[in-house]
Picture (cartoon, rainbow, N blue to C red):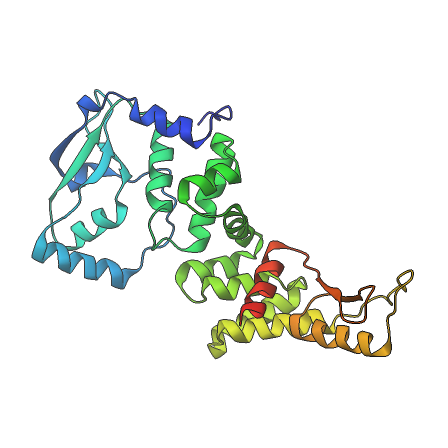
Length: 289
């Protein structure tokens, strides 16, 4: 697939919307004639949830048609969006399914439609969402800010989701399979020691540890790390009491803290450092409690 030249999501969606939609139509087509979407961002499908959806389809029918693409001269259809619905329909024993049939789509449009349809679904796990973000960035030169606007999230949230791809493969698979939650993963990624991170991941799975357990460990890990001696601040009045307060706050927050007395006896400031967006989220979470 050729790489888009930085047109961005808005241009991609506009390209789809400007397609000749008069040729789109809902048809009943055989499920056996639908081949998988090559660009499907969803990697894992919960079997229990599929079974529930299949039972619902048996009782109520398919409430929303899937979307497929068909090139002129081809007999088969390629799925664009709705793989869960298609799989559930097969489980329900359907031999035909309602589908919106689109024509004249290129690979960029098919990828874009599939990614956006899946990203905007609440049940897509965090790693698959991150992989979808990465595909948009790699294939369309879309920025994190553009993605954030389209999915109605902050740029920091998009960046934090992408950071999950830095985790080891087995930890990412743990998120995809539901063995650990996204909150576990965010706490794990704040532990820079890879061996300790993997060790604690295994403990999460074996001992069913809570997200709070992992956050506490991460805080303790940061607080226990040896720090270089502080250089005295020019003109500062850093008394033993201030040093003790700084040490106490650092243990609580798991990060570097500076207490800076002001010019008067009753004013000053507290500086809380963070070293990554995940670190910021973790500290903010503690402060809000």
